[in-house]
Image (cartoon, rainbow, N blue to C red; front, side, top):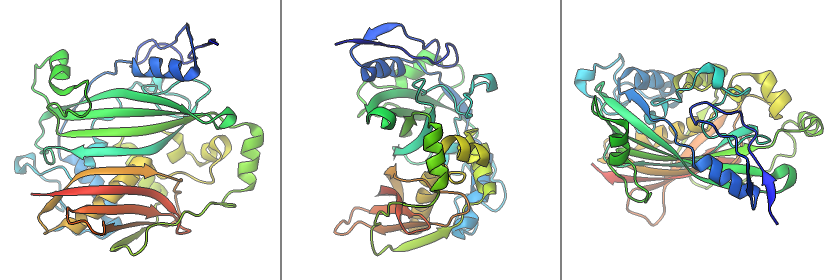
Length: 358
């Protein structure tokens, strides 16, 4: 039996008009159709050294990385030196170029938003393929083509949630090259075909229903209680203990042009989202894991080629986390297990990193 369902998201914005008045066989079908059919704008950027340098200034102390070990020097490198972009630093280039007036009440954009009642957003993980080696930070023009590749509906009732998979293809672009020419050169209907790209990233965003007053009251009465403990892998080859503070979260929000309130506004995070404190960014956990692996690969003639990862449970400001990793047992192809434990030693993020020879 068909039921009428339609998006309540306001029209306009970078994704174009997205209110829909159609009859669908299911909410899942409607969400998939409306979100994946959006033609998202191309995001252009110039690959200068300063954003990467500022990210190094933010996180290298966490790993006690000296300038001689880091890919960037102690002072801002010149673009004439053509330094390579460290793996993971792509996350601070190609930020969402959305006007302030088009942000949602929680500070997020509408590019991937499925509409009410799914108003709460979390980063659930993803993958990154570094296809042709790290891009060169020489000030040249580059582009990111973003596509909502898939939308799925999971759970029932109050636990119902929408998962949006976003593909981002990054590559060089020539001045004067037309938008449609760029799309034709880099985009492929078959996702297994890389096109003319240096990096292909998939991001998984979860959109959840807003919490009722009763749910929020329960959460606030049970902050830190009844937490499920997930056993992490054993015998890591390295462990980096980090206590993220508000300055770290602010800097990362600024570098990624991210105004999401769950990283910046403690009152909002507790009273509207029901979390006990500010949340560490999902993409920041990606950067931390890749940085940890890069430090292990120094001098061994290998570089990171790919990472798959999943964010399992929240990590909070002011609470110690531990970035861990070890080589996959029985493998000689440079594959690593990498994960992050929370303050209780429970598994919070888990990933697999693959490397290749230089």
